[in-house]
Image 1: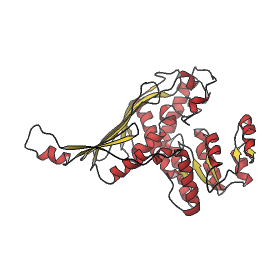
Image 2: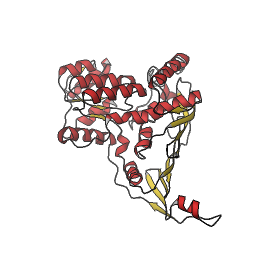
Image 3: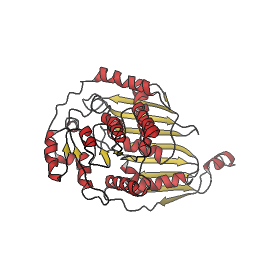
Image 4: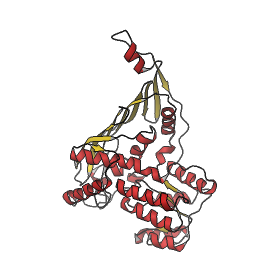
Length: 375
């Protein structure tokens, strides 16, 4: 992703590439062609005073400390997802930012928020088009990955390298969206999760979570990297029907009457509710959602306009993922807001128990694997 952002900044109106930092000597040689200073560490880049803002596209654990170092130097920050590995690290980062650096811009790369299907979905839900939400279900099993994919890097699919599997690597966007489009966070999470169910790795590759909300609504989140053909279908049901997001399309099954009213007052034992099946028109998708986030970040620095996603919002979807992993592997409910220290201890236990059990060897893989900038 760092290489993608470097390319993107060379054509971004209103900003220019100031410098690059990469710990890999070979990559530093490649980046010299951009004719900007290239550094071996983020500290060297920050101390060089060559930039007004930084984009953080490093491994997950390094996101919070690099962001704090940048803030201390007076730099604005746009961070790749996830904002951190654990909810405690994210909360600590947010607290540091809000106490000392709110004069600086802090964004997170939730590029899926720029997609018309999710923007319109959020608009419909927030406007009350569905009435009170009763169910949220996301089947997101189209993250199929081969053993070769997991062998493509020693850091990949390890507790030390990534801090988890499908939830921290593939699903941060989905976990962000499920709370962003609804404006709802559950108060309890239960689940079933499996480590190395379909791949010889040391982290989770199959998870099913159940969310309980304070209004009585129930949520479901099902994901895996071992299933094909996969499904990507988000359903949100409410008192006035159901919205379905699938295949880049949005369908509204709108009831002409309140579901609750009919359920509680109808004199008929068996009855239906007149429902209109509506295809919701959507705007054209942006050519590059990542670039849209960066463009909005630059505009915000210039004019004060809103960011696509504030950095402090990154903790919400992360907490859902942390809670699902903990609940799924312990088979015990996790109440939100969750105990961050307990989750950190849980992560350490997982690293001790499963660390080193990834048996795949690093292998050469074709460049098509990341051609869509997927992880």
